[in-house]
Each structure stands twice: as C-alpha cells, then as structure tokens.
Image 1: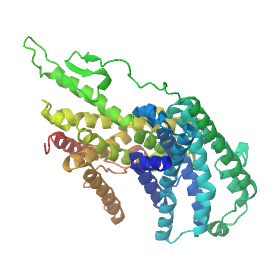
Image 2 (image 1 turned 90 degrees about the vertical axis):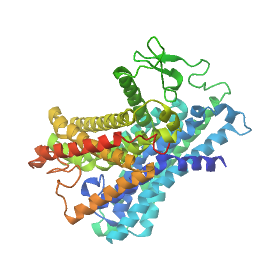
Image 3 (image 1 turned 135 degrees about the vertical axis):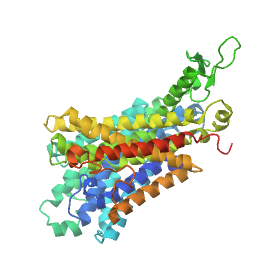
Image 4 (image 1 turned 180 degrees about the vertical axis):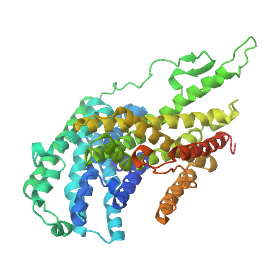
Amino acid sequence: MIAWFELRQQLRGRVFWIVFAVSALMVAGAEAIDALRVGLREVGGAANVLRVHQVWTLFYLFTAAAFVADAVLRDEQSGMAGVVRATPVSRGGYVLQRFAGAFAAVLLCFLSVPATSWAAGLVKGTGAPAGAYGFAFFGLAVPNLLLGCALCFGLATATRSMTGCLLGAVALLTLYGLGAEVGPLWEPFGFAAVEELTRGWSAARSERDWPGVEGVLLANRVLWVGVAGVFVLAGRIGLRRSGSRNSARLPGEGRGPVMVTSRAGATYHEDHRDWAPAFAGGGAGGGVRFDAALAWAQVRMRVALELRQVVLTPPFAVLLLLGLAHAAAALWRAPDPSTTGLVRALIEAFRLAPVVTTIFFAGELYWSERERRMDGLLAAAPVEPPVLVVPKLVALALVLAGLALATAGAGVAVQLARGSAPDLGAWVTWYLLPRWFDWLLVGVLALFFQALSPNKLAGWGLMVFWLIGSMALNRLGWTDPIYRYGLYPGSPLPPALSGAEGAGAFRLYWAVVAGLLAAWACGRSPVRRGA
C-alpha cells in the first residue's frame, strides 16, 4: 500500500513526465540526427538496442537521484515526519516500501527509452528482434537502475540531502569511465562485460543476435545487484536509527516571523518572502510612495523570487544534469579535441535540452501566481503588468545564461582533460554569447505564447506546434532566415565556424522582433485577465 502510494506520488509529479518526454524526444532524435547519437555505434539492430539501453541508464542516474531523494526526504520537508512516526507502521518496512515505489517510478519512466527505440526502428524498417529488447531491459537496464536507486537511497539517508545522491551518481559515472582499467567484472553498468562476450562478432551477427546472461556478464550482474542490496540495507538501518520522534525540526520552527523593510519601502516577512510581499508607507501621511525606487525594489524582489522558482526545483536539477551528461559525452567522443572541434560538437549535440528547459519554465513562471492562488491578491495591488512579467523574462534570461556558462565550463574541462589547451576567448565569442542569445529568443517566444494563451498547457502546445513546424519546414527546404524565427545564415554555428555572411544583420533583425514580442507580453498581466 505504501509503495503504491509512493508510486502515485511520483507519477503525479512534474519531474516524471518531463524526463519521460525528454528521453523519448532524445532517443527519437538520435535516430534522425547523428550528433545526438552519443555513445552509440553505427551498427543497427540488436547491438544498437543494447547500447541505447546501457547509455540511457547512465543519464537516468540523475533521475534516480531526484526520485529516491524525494521519497526519502519528503516527510521531513513537508512537516509530516512526526505524523508518520506516530503511526503503527514499522519504520524499516515503511522506508523500504517508499524505496520500492520510487524504483518502480524510475522503471516506468525508463520505459520511454525502449518504447521510442522500438517505434523508431519500426518506422525506419531497422527494428531488432523482440528478444533483444527483453534482454536489454531486464538483463542490463533494470540491474543498472537498481544500483543507481539503491546508492542514492543509502546516501540520501546518510546525508539527508539530494547533494549526496548527486555525488553518488558522479562516483558511479567515474567508475564507469575507468571500465577499461578495472575490468569487465568491476565496471558497474555492464559495458565492458558485453564487449567481452561480443568480441569478434561480425556486423551481421551483432544486428540479429545478443549475448546471454552468462560468464563474466552473469558475474557482473550478480556482483552489482548484491552491492545494490547492501546499499538498501544500509539505508534502512540508517533511517531506523535516525527516526526518533523529536528529530528533524522544521526550518524556522520555534521563532516567529521577522519583518524586514528595505530602503525603498518594501516590507515582507522573512520566513515567508514568497508569500507576503507588501509595500510599507512613507512620508508624513503614511501613504505609499509610488516612485522609481519602489518600482525598482519590486522588480529586484520579484526577479529573486522567480529565480528561486526555477533554480531551486527538482525539474531544473534533473534537466540540467541530464543535459550536461549528454553534452559531456558528446565532447568526450568528438574526434577533434581543439576548441573549434569541441565548440562545433557541443553546439550540435546540446540543442534539445535548453529548448525543453526554456519552454517548460516559461510556462511555470508565467502562471505561477495563478497556480499558487496569489493572482487575486496581486490583482488588487497597485502593480502594473510589466512589473509582473519583466522579472519573469529577466529570471529566464539569467537561467539561460547560467546554462550556457555551465555547458561552456564543461567544454573547457573536457578539453583540458583531453590534453588540449582551450581558447577561452573563442569559447565566449563562439559559444557562450551566441548560444545564450539564441536560447533567449526561444524564451521570449515561449513567454509570448503563454501571454497569448488562456492557460499553461495551451502555451506549451503552441510551442510544440512551433517546433514541429520548424522541423517540417526544414524537411521542405524552407530555411530562409527572413521568415524563420531566430535563424541566421549558418545557424546554429557562429560565423567564425560556418563561414556564412550576414549573420549579424539577421540577429539584429530577430532581436527587434523578439523585443516587440516581449513588449506585447509585458502588457498582458498574468493575474488580471479574467479577474
């Protein structure tokens, strides 16, 4: 019963459906775009199915961290830990069922990978036998996902934070990277063991056949499933010892709310900054001063609030880590380790994750007041629409700038690890600034569609139609930047890499268009429509 409850909680969460959609889109995209085939061989059939499942278990380590950490920490974060401990339920059985529900959610989410791979193979006529999918899922993916979830479970109970889970995921990835040195038995994900069993196979046999769970692969699976069991047992013991009724005091418990007044006159509760913004009076009459200082204070406070609504959420952490893992893998396998080669590889590979992140959080930010039922309060406040919308756009721009900086940093780190000296100026002018500008254009369009729509789902739907339309126009050969939003000659490569001329003029052209869209969106208040 508790496991079923946990599974329903995970299925109702946004992280599940975001990762499900992203993994399905990226697996489908890998069938059509060579740059997205990170870690995959050119050979198709059964070998491709096995490789797809193994590679995606690496990416799903971060999903496992999010799901399991949420299952372990939810009670304390929601203030329900004391109520749970007061129930006549075994502490050990309770946490094990919560872990089982989270693990089941990870498996259900991972089903997007074999389902999309099978559908893509069916459309292309290059599908593998059904047995290859069964072996890849049950023989390779399930043990790998169990190991990742068990490790995160043990670390979450020990550290009481998601940070410990993420460090564990990085440790497993490091051990995978040392696979050639540690041997097929000690490499945790079975890559080396499968290669050991299939060494010497012809391309034709690799397309139609797959190895059995035997020999070194059987020993590898038994070893790491046993390690997973040890982590689960350690987590159960750790939670039982830390489960005293008087532990886990809530943040801020035992002290009253603190009123803070800024220099511009903005007053709010320190314990509830997201809930109770107010505006203190000033002057001899005690009235409110509606001047530039107060407007600037409103904007600054709202930018900080909107940033927290993005950065401090599990969906952002999962999308960021998933995108970074995919980008790092593409950089590591790029044939040219120079700055030019790695910038080109990163631009080609890291295309979907920022677009999905932008579309998702544009909707989340624009409709946040209505979803939290604060729209009525803000509609009655003397706040103009731009004060509500501009901070959302600024927060989205800062998030995208951070995403560009993080991926550029990953590129520089990989280049150093591969023994090549990075050109930092080129990374800034060829990747950081151009990519941030391109993503910001998408963010403005996403906010514009949200302002145009009656609800969040409709805004997301318009952006999906835009993406599908863009792909259809590419297929038809309609690629003229004069009518394709955000495109320029040589896009997405900068002129220094593409050699195309006129990119600056088209970027200025689309910047003006984006400015007009943003101005229109800023005039549409997300809280006053329909009030």
